[in-house]
Image 1 (cartoon, one colour):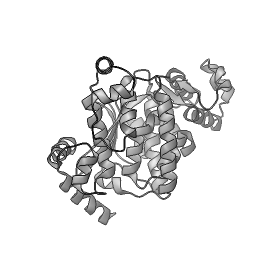
Image 2: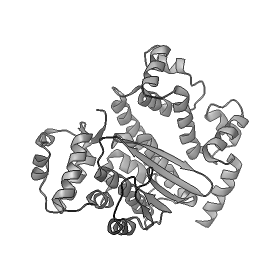
Image 3: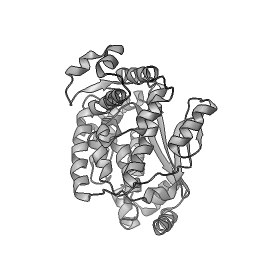
Image 4: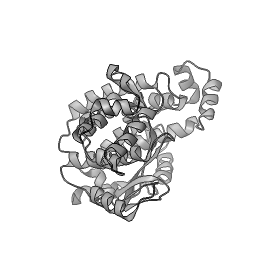
Length: 336
């Protein structure tokens, strides 16, 4: 289902409402979604129902920042398999990498972009048009809270920005939750934090469990993509490849059982090009792989013919060279 959430992510809202004295039945009746009681774990909840439930929570609890307090109460189980996958990651950088790859199995309700340079890192989130303000608040607060839980102490991001405008009273409350300056009326919803945070280690990292959960997450993502947009099917296929050599539109069209012209037309209708998807997958992988193998080998893994091609792409992505990045990364590890 396009623009939807998992059962566990939706159920987490009902559980939180019950803790506030609002019954499950009252909540479902209020949004005309009593059929949810007959759903099984493999089904999806439409974004409209999810957004309506959070708006109901805002009014039922008389709390304009309901979504933020809901997000601050997030539990790994609310994320389903992805929650346990992130728990088993080595550090924050690895967790962000998995989030970018699999966030749609939890909630396919927006687009997440990760960017960084040698000083600052950012996670920006653009919600789909059907998302309410409360959906945005929950999403942002849940990211922050999950990271804090996994590291074991409260972090202080550089800043948090929201597209929605807030009164000074509400900004003060948001600053207490996020433990940093918070701004409204921004161009995008974004969390900015120091580059050094990427190397913060998680308390429960477990490589063996992580590998098993990666396979399970990939299986769930593939099922979600069966009737999804062409760009998502291409992105999913890219993510499953051991390396990115010989990634061409012709080869991927064949794998998806369509003609190259058809695939190209489908991507164009979605304002996407194959080369852009390949570039995004390379950028996602380089974050996880740099420093774990020689740069020449990394270039081959990412499908570049020469290391100089990797250097140019890296400069475009992060405004620095791979070697400058590694020096900064090593310094961050020593200081953490």
